[in-house]
Image (cartoon, rainbow, N blue to C red):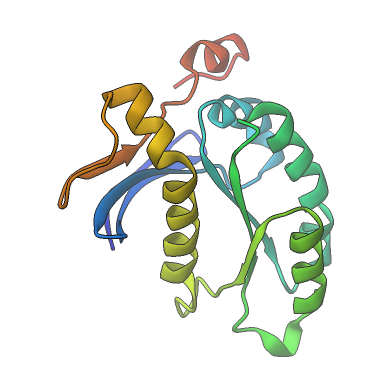
Length: 180
């Protein structure tokens, strides 16, 4: 897996990830909105067309976990009903400061039909695994319908790159008064 690009657009970081799933190369655009309230008006524009989302919280800060319900509701209100969502508890390297038990995150994920993982951005624990799992689930959910609708073919061939890269809704972003 590799990062190909890294950009910052007014509080929204952009990168691409490429992973192999079932012998196919999957390239995805990653839009990191950081969940900051001041960027909330533009984040809803990024939901349209999204096929996956990582909802992250800090295991050492319960208020970030408490906000997950609101973010999940907003995501479900603005995104495709089939969107694949992974709940990610970050900073698992700080076990001594843990305030949100792993079982609590797992239970929430199970109740809301979400994937679940704990990671550490600091030491890279499970970061690649999180991307691999969510992109694999996205591929398995969307590949056949996307290929049939967009490319009018039944299955990708070995070595073919499949790109799940919907662009944010630029018109909606401009209407909200937040533009590049």
